Image (cartoon, rainbow, N blue to C red; front, top):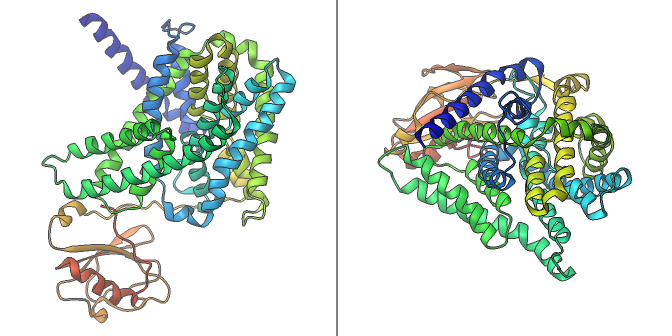
Length: 496
């Protein structure tokens, strides 16, 4: 027993180390990092140098749910909700109507070129309908040159929020393929209630978490990630128990707390960012283990045709319909179409189908895996190049955090706030001493063009400055804000 556990730990640690070291090449060649992890799994698998025999789809499905909850949560808390509010309805359209359109268009095409039934063809389309946030944004690591925020924020929201709709369609189609009888009324009711329950449960759990996290005052900071961990999976399981969408519940939970002021937020973000990367490595390596490379050769012909159709026709159709009459330009729509990378989600859904349908789904799994890999290679390696050609790249400024422990301030009677100086503010062109700030109010830092300035009484403020100030009492924060902005409502609370 001890020897087997030691061998497992040895092999597992070497796989993680190898995957992390190989991930450096994704920066150099522009390949999505998921490919590195998947190929590592294939190398370790039964037809690779490792020779590990693994065909346990049930275990894969269980681990996939665990990993995807963490990946979705990490993606949600990293999303700046204020940047997507202007295009929120467009994002929702891509995550719902876009998924349905992709499912139908791909399903009809697959029916034409394969021996699949209509239900199997539409299941294949539903499996491939969702995009992957990790795959999309791993290609944009260079912070000096970034895709325009308008486009990237929409892609970020779409990638994080379209998994639940795809998951719902896959479950419905699997039910039909297994011969489960459902009347039209039940389907319509379930179609409405499934996302609504997910939304409600996610929101309730998020509000409960924020309230509890900010008052529980745990003796050890390391317990706060554990508290968050419990709420993540409580959100998922509670929604599923109520016949709702668990993944949507987790995403709503993460989006809500990302927009709120909570204690130890930086600690939680750092912990779950690292934990989600570990989950992705484990998930992608596991999915790679399931694949027999020799099977991919047999599906290569149809896989290439389906990949080209998905990239060049199905995805653009969905994007141009969902973004019709929008503020997005033709070039932006072209790029959004090309940025629909596939990742872990389709492979997870394919393994789920294998669990439900048995050997009937083997061909679906092999084809899905081939299409995902080809999509990642073709689109992932060319995203940055295409953005440059379309003129969508712009200079980026790395936003660093103020060097202050906000949690310690929160335990005191002091108030602390971050504010951006906008055009028309009272502070523009004025010195600190001219603002008549409350007694004891101090401007600690000014962040200007990526640099920190420690101001004195004679320092003058400019449009675009971000500043951090503290007051002697929390009740004086609003009074200080009025001195800077004359009551303007755009001040922003710091993330603590």
